Image (cartoon, rainbow, N blue to C red; front, side):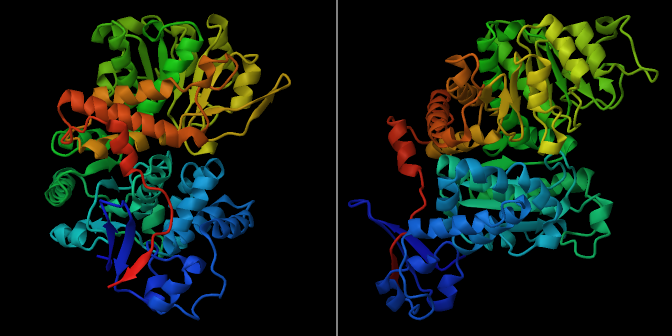
Length: 570
């Protein structure tokens, strides 16, 4: 662990850092390095005199310089991503200050969609290790690996095995960039202290033949571990984490279709767990839908919903919406009957083999589709489903670019005055439709939210911002609320509380022509409100270990902001 300690004076609320490090070692620790902002006194005390230019700068002056450097890569998002990550590895406070000042511009660079390109080039662009890599071959040394962490106290862990990344599939050890990016977003959007977080990569091999054949690939060079061996390995990791950090919030990210839901269900009662692909995507999508449906003048429970893409995200979204419909008075059977899920083989039906446990409740019976036209291979395609079902809501989680074509969209418009269309797939080039096309094909009537960021659209003389269903609106606030009260469990009602808060911020509720969701620049204040709601709900359900009555005060006390602390030598 790093040789420094954060000290807080409870009486004066002063904070400082005590360390034995000095000289070049101090400049190489991103959590301590201030670069040109080290004071004259600190330069004398810590052996830095002459190791830095004479000018002592403020954090704001450093931000101005680093922003100019960032802008030098304007036409190269991946290079901007690399630049920001290098800054993160050199000066953590400066990184967070810079990105927080330019959040709307830089969040798509450090997170979706640019992180997808970084993941694919991980081994070739590798510069600096961060977090912990737990390889299967070290399955008997997991405790030792966890003891090698940099920070002693951990509130939040993001873990992946790299099998189901951002619509680009199995990327092996390159998946480590995802937990790193997610933790950056937790800090930027909710103020979770980065000194109390830990990214973990479970390296269980890869089935990506391109990676296995790459001489520069940095991960374990064997096919993915499956079955009993995989389950025992994951259980060993979780049990060791639970023993060392009994109050940690464990965030599962980008696991494969078969493992994502099973891992969540297996360990949800064992350790406070959250799967962003299943629950986070669903929460922000549901919040957007609540606002869109209200803006369209209808109720959610009366909608027919087509979800194109029935994997981890698609079925997670269906589950959240189904639960919301039940809250509006439908039975579970009535709610499930409102859904039409489409997978690789067309409409999900009971006659199909190899349905997942998540797909099975939504599979349609033969009587539901009697006499429907089918393709020559027996599949029922998207256009046919739209024609037969006449849905008001179409959601894409398929990573199939252009799947929501003009024929599909205009068919929706024939029977729905304000169709709700969400092409959610990431990265941008995999989106099911371009928002500009959706507005043109529906004469501006479509209510749209995308998964990736898209530029504003000029339509009928008006510049229209496109709402982004970005998980950054939900998971940071959920995590902050859980951590604040040390919740032992993340319940469906806590997720519902987050959805309701976000939906109330929808600009479309005040202006029918406005976007469904607020801009990402509002993510931080929204995260605070979500955290308060989640913490209160945890207390109401009896899963909170801290029963502080003044939840807003508790939340505000936890929120970290990027600023330099005084250093004291010990």
